Length: 428
Image 1 (cartoon, rainbow, N blue to C red):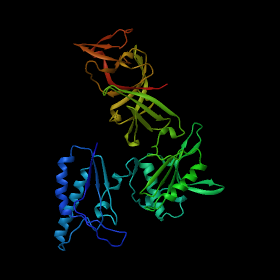
Image 2: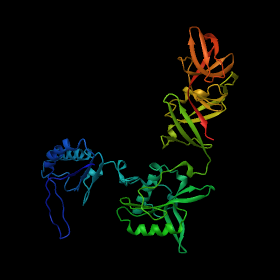
Image 3: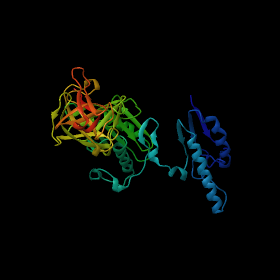
Image 4: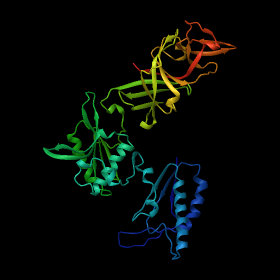
């Protein structure tokens, strides 16, 4: 259950014509009301409606003294913010005329066009930031403001790459050409580029009724399209391929691209967590799946570390210092690429520590270790991976497989080059 708070105190009507009225609020009384309800709703799930946020109502002052008027405006703004902060479930801000200046001061990128849709509320872009202008007839029209907002949201919020987005996409409706305002493509199993979502855009606040019918006619002739969206920047309707209204359309997924996708399992020993990592071949683009949730990793949050030749998880084998490739990982797993490297594992002596033949070990560089650490160690020009155990001046390199015996050496004969903090293995 949730508590519903409708913030108003005293309302009277000023009829300006038979079908119109304005709401006036005595802001001086709101202070008492806000603090009266605060103790009641602070522990409840609360939906808040703040209505009548018109420019001639809030801020409101009948005083001609500028200093007093500024003080009243500051007080009104504080009260407005207090009302907003009481919403911990949903917040609705409403106006019936020219919006209050307080509304225009809100960062619209923190608001959404609809409670169930991830599109952020409409905002204007600078013309210098417009995309696809070589395909647009009139970049100054009102409709273009909404289209550019939508394109920006597809890229910033829904994470679609620009190469999957186009404008003025031509289709035929009953043998007549028509042009879809915005289209998002995907690649099917045959690596063919097909429309995935089509968008019909209308000028801001112009309504979407007519646009919805137009969109349905487009969906009828683009049978492979999965979703259709119509918006005027204020309202939105989203249809699936069966013309049923849905809450939102999908975010970008790397499976929409034609490149081959490789999947890996990442075991993080330090955090005792296992992730599924998806990577586009020949790119640094990666996603993580944790606890069933897809986490898209931004390019700036991807680091690469050097990959070296095989290390023995059995008897020591020779290796070279020359890197044979790179491994891309998110910053949530490695924080500094200079402090880590990766190395291929050969053998089965560490299988009981979840390090298998063919795995790539993620290694943190260090020259010392604590007991029970899994280390990468040099022995007379050869390298191995074992569990470290120091006993006086003697070191035991212990395998995690009963088929193998510990290696007993003097401390001075061993050089530690790092400790294993995780492994990566390719999913079959």
